[in-house]
Amino acid sequence: MDISASLVKELRDKTGAGLMDCKKALVETNGNIDQAVDWLREKGIAKAAKKSSRIAAEGSCEVKVKGNVAVIFELNCETDFVAKNVKFLNLVSLIGDALLVSQPETNEQALQSKVNGKPLQELLLEEVSTIGENLSFRRYELVKKSENQTFGAYVHMGGKIASLTVLNGISPEAAKDTAMHVAASNPRYVSRDEISEEFINHEKEVLLKEALNENAESDKPKPQNIIEKMVEGRLSKNLKDICLLNQPFVKNPDETVEQYVKSKGVSIALFKRLAVGEGVEKKEENFADEVMRQVG
Image (cartoon, rainbow, N blue to C red; front, side, top):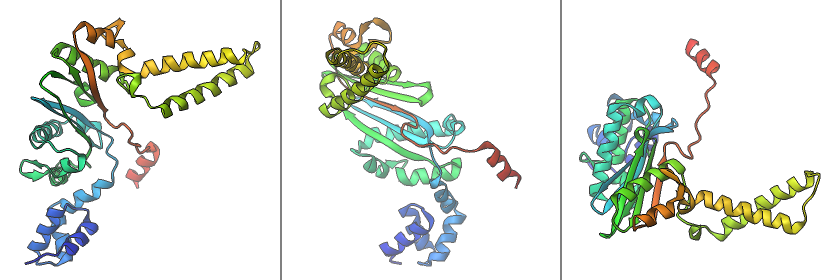
């Protein structure tokens, strides 16, 4: 039977199930949309789709490297309990291995990449039914390097943080060390050269208002030229704090990261860092209300 795209879309809108599952359900029920809904429910797929509205802010970040290719991504679930589950962790590893092979360029392409013979998007929907929580493939990046560069990869606390560095030159030790540093210190830029003028001007404006407010409340107000010097000093410190090369190296705070990599004969080309749940607005539950709902 020929199943139209509009019919598949209608079923998808009703159930939230994946396109392939919707099409299969319609084929199995000869295009009867009500029966197709029941078919999906019986398979547990429609039920899984309903869970997609839940907030998935726990999970695991992963970075995998093979040759000159690396992938770094975040797979979210709803609870820390599931995030530590072997089945979930195996799924994360399986996805990482598959993405290293398919090498999609974007998050959208990654969701269509085959994992165990199925598009990742469809596999995740099936796993929602098995695991019992919403799963979200939220962030993904593909990174490639040249032969004269080195990857450094580090995963902290079982996937709470994942970091990746690319060094110009060959030094596995320095690459791993800088990846650990990135995970620990959370820089925003490699160097000040990467910071936009817009960002710098905004910081100056904030710091100037802060200094003027302090000056207005001071018993001994400072002249304008001194305030301007204060602002420049604070700006310089703030920019150093967020630039990887200027940060004190975590394994030896007496030297900067820049001094450390220079001592190893390499330089930092770029870095990536993911932390679980960054930017996700977690739902705040009222415990008393939750208890009352359970009692009711």
